[in-house]
Length: 404
Length: 123
Image 1 (cartoon, each protein chain N blue to C red):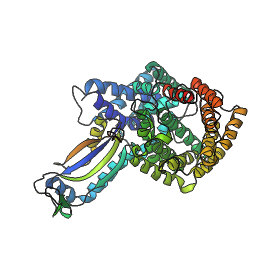
Image 2: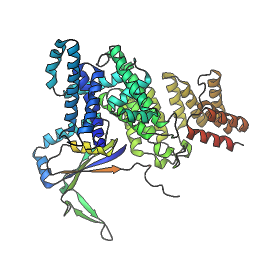
Image 3: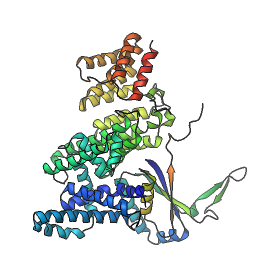
Image 4: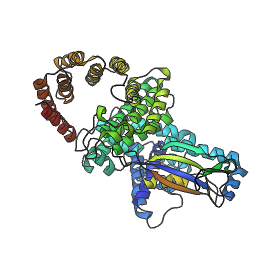
């Protein structure tokens, strides 16, 4: 057995092992350390002597390491605590409780006491089973940065005395929203890379979809979980058509829709149907917008009126300048560029998206459609200066040059 | 990441063993499906009916010829599948090892190329 085999087993077992050990020791940081030690041991010993039951081996080894640590601690502090902890050692995972424990693990990894970056790193590591190296690669940051984030996050959780349990009914919905937003941040990093020379990183988006599927299986009665899953599936469905062979972006209007992933669209629509049963929330509304695109044979035949309505609804339940800007784009398609320009100019007047390349990008497009070419060109050039993604920047410059 | 199809290939012996305690087989398969759903990797799963109830459409001649199943010489028959969305081939194999299946059966693990890997047809 090689490294890839160890990693494969770890991917499947990580959440369950860390969850069970946290339940067993009451100490999330200790559980995570013990689990990581077990993986490190597996990487050394499995190639020489592959275990008959790799999953069981990992759990047993992690548990032993956790007990070792508890023993060392109790030697220093309180030997009675060890006596209290020992009887649980022989217990197997309780299948009825493990689902709740994995869910509790998601809640603790996405806890509001943590910085947003730490939530992402911790969720990918303990729930997703990714290594620090894989997380660093996903977010284009150095490995030590990720390791430091995770170490600090574990200390913060201990210092804040965050309990390992499902949030109380009163705060459950809000905390679930926190988990969803972490998954969404991971997905966004994959679907619109904020930096670097690649537009899409489907492997990063995949991690988010996988987490969303897990959450949907564990919280099947929460519409927004299905809404987020639908949004991710429907957005990812367009990935194969979104970049040219040379890596440059292809805009929605120019995409070869036959290259969309139709099984992903079907899964997305199914998840959206589940999300719709009790009225759509912010993720469900975004998924419904993605579904309107996914079901349309072309840009012209897209139901833009419906998309405008959905953006209006989204702007009410989750107001944001980006939603306004997207609404402007939809209005331009449904009713023409002049009305859309008014929305964009209002956004600029209220300075709600300062420094974003998106505002001048859209404004430039609208001006071009209105035949105001010199102004359009200036806006697109401004957008190119503000844009951090090299692929997008070159498209903007090409468009600006075409307006000469 | 990639999609993989785990193809169940049963023999007469393994199919008989499964049918001997079909309730148990259904229960363990259900549990396995639950596990894959909670791991976020399962896209689809189906089991096939008795091969004796199937037919073969044979294209060896000029016109397709339909004959009743089962399928002559074949020792291992396609009996069902799991479609997975996993991080690596090794993960697909690890899931395949966990499929509750009687002795004698085989599981073939095949990658499903993404639509972006299919060569574009020149127009």
